[in-house]
Structure formats: C-alpha cells, structure tokens
Amino acid sequence: MSGHEYTPKSKVGKWFNDRLPLLTLANHLTDYPTPKNLNYWWTFGGILTFCLITQIVTGLVLAMHYIAHADMAFQSVEHIMRDVNYGWLIRYIHANGASMFFLAVYIHIFRSLFYGSYKSPREIIWIIGIIIYLLMMAAAFLGYVLPWGQMSFWGATVITNLFSAIPLVGEGIVTWLWGGYSVDNPTLTRFFTLHYLIPFLILGLVVLHIWALHVPGNNNPIGIDIKKPSKDTVPFHPYIVIKDGFALLMFMIVFAFFVFYTPNILGHADNYIEANPLITPAHIVPEWYLLPFYAILRSVPDKLLGVIAMLSAILILAALPWLDTSKIRSAVFRPLYKQFYWILVADVLILGYVGAMPAEGLYLLIARIATAYYFLHFLVVLPVLGFKERTTPVPLSITEPILGGSPNLATVKKKDSFKDQ
Amino acid sequence: MEKKTKRRDFLFTATYAVGAVGAGAVIWPMIDQMNPDASVKALASTEVDVSAVNPGKTITVLWRGKPVFIRRRTSEEIAEARSVKLEDLKHPEKDEDRAKNPEWLVMLGVCTHLGCVPLDQKGDYNGWFCPCHGSHYDTSGRIRKGPAPTNMEIPEYKFVDANTIKIG
Image 1 (cartoon, each protein chain N blue to C red):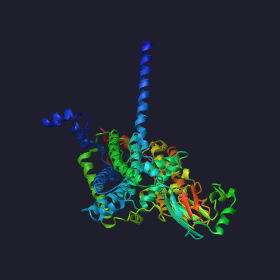
Image 2 (cartoon, rainbow over the protein chains, first blue to last red; image 1 turned 180 degrees about the vertical axis):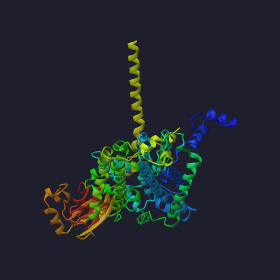
Image 3 (cartoon, one colour; image 1 turned 60 degrees about the vertical axis):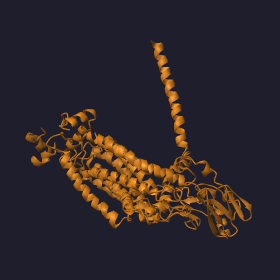
Image 4 (tube, rainbow over the protein chains, first blue to last red; image 1 turned 30 degrees about the vertical axis):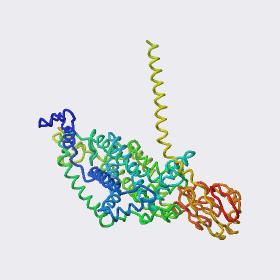
C-alpha cells in the first residue's frame, strides 16, 4: 500500500467501494510493495495457488462422474478413463496435479528454510503453512483411497491403523474412522466427503496465509527488513505478476510432461487392481511425497514410538521459529548453516529413497541414521548454531551492496547517500 | 450492588453450563454416526467347512471384512510352537492357549502393526511374515521380530463338528 487512502476514480466505483471496499483490496494487491531482489524461488507461492485451483476444478468435474461405493468406485474410475469425454485428461491432471502440488510445496518450504522466512515476524505465516501442508497430506491420502485399487485399500488400512497405536482408545478410534471392523464401504463414503471438504479448508487457510504475509511483507534473499515502499521495492503488479507468470509457464511445462508423456510414472501399478481385503500387495509404498515420513515410521522398531516419531517429524517444523536461535534470516550470511541446510536436504532425500525400499538390512540402518540426523538438525544443530556461528556482514538495504559496491557493513555505513529515503 | 453482580454471575454460569450440555447433545450424534452401524454390527458369524484342508495347508476366509487364517499345522510346526520358552516372547502366550486343538490354528490374518495381511510360510520363524513393515510371526502366529506389538489375534470360534468351524 502506498500509505495513503485509495479512492476509485469513477463515481460508480466510489459508490460501490464506500459500501464494500473490494476496490481498495484490489488496489492493495496490485500496489503491494515487494522486495526488488526476489528470485525465482519466490514464485512458488503463485504456482501453489495455481495447483490448488487446478485440483479444485478438476476434482469438481471428476466428482460428477465418480461413484463413491465399494462395489462401483473402481469401475467408475475406469469409466472416467475410457468413456467420459476427456475423462482421461481430467483424471490424469488431477492425479499428477497432486504430485505437482507437493513438488511445489516442498520447494516452497525449503525456500523458507534457506532464507529464514519462518523467523520473526513471520511465525504465524509459517505455522499456517504447516497446517496447510498437513491438510494437503490428509487430502492426498484420502484422494488416493477413492479409486479403490489395491494400493488405495491397503494404504487406507495402514494409515488408519496408525491410530491404533494410541493406548486404550486407539482401537475404538480406528473402528470409528472405518465405520466398521475393516476398511469398507462406510470408510470409502466418508473419505470421499472429507476429500471434497479439505481443499476448501485449504483455500480458507491460504487466504489467511497471504493476509498474514501482507502484514510484514515478503522476506527476501538477503533476509533484511526493508522500508516499504522505497527504492528497495517494486509494486506487485506488473513486476511480480509477470515474473510469477513466467515461472508458472515453466512449471506447467513440467506438469504437462507428466500428464501427457508419463501419466502413471508417479503412481503404482497395483492400484489398477481392484481392492481385495484378502491379499496385501507384496510391497506397500505410499506416494513419493510421503516417503521420508514413511521411512521415519519404519525406522523405529516400536509401533507407538514409530507413530510418534513420524508425527513429530512434521510437527517439529511448527516449532522451527523458536528452535532456530540465529537472528540472521538468510543462509547467504550464515556460512555454517548453509552447509547444514544442504545436509538436511540430502538427509530428507535419503529418507525418501529408503522409504521406497524394503525395511531390512542396510536400508533399515540408513533409515535409522537419517532419522536420527533429521531430529538432530532441528533439536541440536539449529539451536546451537545460533550462538556459535560467525555470520558474515549483512547489508543495510538491497540497493546498497550494488550501488555502494561493497556488502561490507562498515563500508556501507559511510555511504549515507545510498540509504533508504 | 454486590448482590446484583453475584446474581448476574450465576446467570452467566448457568447459561454457559446449559449451553455446553446442549452443544454436547448436538455434537455426540454427529460423532457417533461414524461408528459401525446396525447393519455392519449384524454381520452374522461364518461357518467354514475345513474337511478339504490337509496338514500343512492354510485357508483364508473373510469374517467381518477381515481375513481369518485357518491352518492345519504339521506335527513339526506344533512341536516348534510348543517348545518355545515364554520368556523369549515379546507377547507371552502359550501355544496351548492359542490353539486348543493343536492341529488347528484359527486366527485373524491381520498384522497387529498396521493391519496388513501377513504371508504364509515366510519369515525367520517358519510362520508368517508381514511384507509391509517386516514383522515375523512363528508357527503359532506369535510376534517374534519386527514392529508389531502383539501376537495375531485369535477370534472366538468353535468346532461345530469335526469338519466345521464356526467363527464369531
């Protein structure tokens, strides 16, 4: 916002805006000052909005043809694939769209981790983001059950059984979730209902996420507080709109590649076999985006502790703003954190890999080491690093290092002429 | 003045209390509707003819949507199951208590870890092996190795006659 009150130019606009200030909101969104040094890692917020809308629109269409019944669900999905006009396209967009959504969200999360976007004053944005991520996982899991294939059925069985690890009430909760004594028709119908509901909850949280973002404004690659508006900022429209739009086009190329050339590569062949409660597929794996957490679950030899470890691995992220004790946001100025960051990235990728492999022998050993390191990173490395690390000098503003020619704080301080106005 | 305030406090508290009871009365049906309904609960027990099952064979039948293993064990398997010391077991149960008729082992074919169906005649203890997360069960269906916390469950069953088992 440019600081002054916005008044629509036309009389009708003014009349309307006085009664419902939608034009003020639109003006805020277009003028919203953004740091001029945002790189392409910052375009994933827009890409994620696109993913959410794609899932909602294709999902609505699929729901017109899908039948949520244990006897008919599998057939109705095949009916969508073979009979419904463009049904194959819509379903492949929806199925691969889930993977693209997670791909984008992981980049978005790791962007935050690198540039310290979760730190004060952006903790609430971060925590809302974690809740969105949890809801995304719930929606993805519920959606995967709907085609009622073998992986659907056994994935649903395994995941719902996680609750049976809770002492005393666990079995009762599982029966309650199932609406019976095993995963069956009552389970399918309620999963369909919830799968339909959750995207709208996510949509609401996305509004809060963006609202909370617009209070302090965007973080930026050098992670400093900037004056807004100033010569360090550009208006959201057209600068960021164009940049986001270009990144979105690039992203859509990747998306389209999966949809048109390898639509089933991210899925599992067993899910084209109809659900059979008597036979568990020899090798159950969740979708790729849940594999790191699955590896953590399996690396603990105790049922309850395994479930606790898996949930903690996600929930620990919510405490991140307080676990990271460093005042410096961006990893650009944190030489040690930068290294630990890449070790964490590698650690999560390794967890994902061993999560896809059988839980035995060397794989199990690697999974255990990687699980231990994951928690070590958040519980020991980050808190200690904030006190021990010698950070490099942080510039006073975005323009100074470029126009002043030096990122050195002492040099920059002398050059008053380049300070914010 | 003080008296008036107390009266108001009482009214607030009473209102909240009644409101809470009312909210609970509305919420409970919304929660309980998800529990197994009458038609699910009414699922009859299953009678199984086991005359065609030879020693060393297992049949799987569906009961309440879950697989039930009915295994006719060989004498070696029985001997193996009965020779195990109780202190070696994670979930100590005597084989005598699990298989009243030693030749027949009737149990829910559901891994107690996360509910997969274990594979017959696999694993380190010649019993069952769960492919999902690597739990090994012995010839009595008792957990010996892996993440599962308890032995596979024995459902209620009885022999109606020499060749028929009634489950449930």
